[in-house]
Image 1 (cartoon, rainbow, N blue to C red):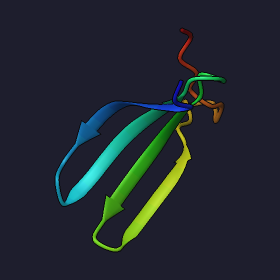
Image 2 (cartoon, helix red, strand yellow):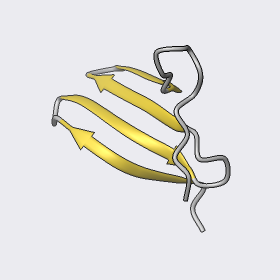
Image 3 (tube, rainbow, N blue to C red):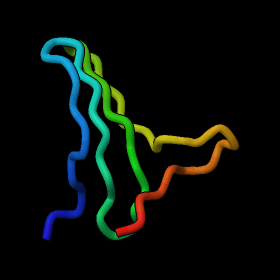
Length: 54
């Protein structure tokens, strides 16, 4: 079983994706544009990680 599952993707050059950790349910935001990229937990309005229950 893969640890991370991509649940959303938008763009081709300027890409934004949402990945879910299948063990914890925490959602992560991944963004890349050219040679720059970032991967960070997706937070709700209270600053807590967004969790997808499976």
